[in-house]
Every structure is written in structure tokens, then in C-alpha cells.
Image (cartoon, rainbow, N blue to C red; front, side, top):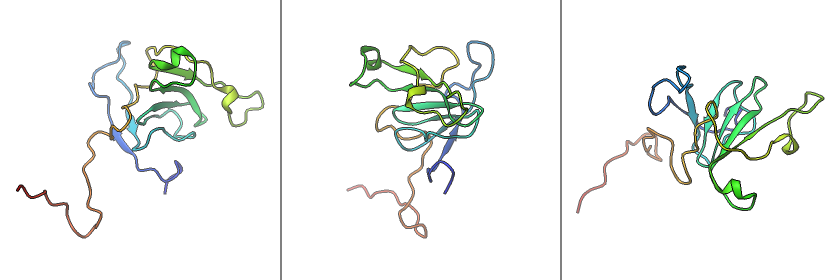
Length: 140
């Protein structure tokens, strides 16, 4: 079980593998099989879930989060959007009050989330019985 609460991680490079708009290679993205990454992560890493992607700061807490469109908030949250995270003055753990208002995505932000129900890339189904391989379903 890892520090992320026991999630299994898949590491995937950028979909294009090409340089970002600034000429720098795109950083590697780690996919998690659930809707959102954990609140604390590997400092400097980028983690993508189904409905949220997070870029972690040097302290391992969110620097920027990118959200799948959702209701229940301001109109702009019904589109792909980002939130920047500040830090409390005492240097402690950030709280929801440190999460900035929604804004449009821009270069350098985490990639868009995969989408609800979309599994991590390159995931091979595994047998629920480790000693038995997955067999193809028979065709009738």
C-alpha cells in the first residue's frame, strides 16, 4: 500500500510524446484508476484521474488542479477548468480556503482528466484468480 492511500498507479507519457508549445518535452503523467488523484502526491508530479488531474507542488500538495466539467458551481465550472492552490501563511497543510476560483486552462497546466468511466491507458484486464491466466471468451 502506498502513501497515496493504496491506489495502483499507471505511468504513461504524454499522448503525443512531442514537445509542449514552449519547446520543452511534456512531463510524464501518472494515471490512477479512480476519479481523482489523492490530495497529497509526489512533489513535482502530475497525476490524472477520470474527473480531475493534479500537478503537485514542491511540498506534495496540489499546485494546480484541472477539473472535468460539472454542475453545482459557477457557470465556468460547466466547462473544462483549473484551480490554483495557495498555501496558508503558517506553512501548514492547505485547506479548501486555499483553492482558487475556477479559470480557463492554459499552457503548463495538468492535462485534461480522462473522462468519467474512462480507464487508465494500457490497462490489461487481470484474472481475479492470480494463479489462472485470463482466457478469451468463447465465441458462440
